[in-house]
Length: 140
Image (cartoon, helix red, strand yellow):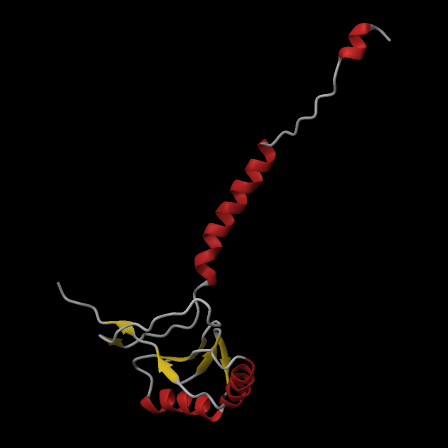
């Protein structure tokens, strides 16, 4: 072996250009699909001028029961029966009693449907049930 061969070192380089291309493609895919994933149940909330409730970051994630205009009940965008809601809410309340229980009713839903949602939560043993509304739009 000559002196020149011993001096030659191995070069350990990674060509990152293909990885950047893959990253950009994934970024575009996520940007396109993210708005589609947050669609959820279409509920047109009533507007009020009530003060917003202070949110405690240490509290568990709130339980939100949605009532659409047709009177159907949803938990996490999945349609549920009153019996399924009762079972789920009872189990959650027994495990995490500090959870906020909220009813999100469409403004064109029958009053009875929203009231029945609250009754089911009360039957589950929940002490306090709150209603979700939108802030009142001010005309300028």
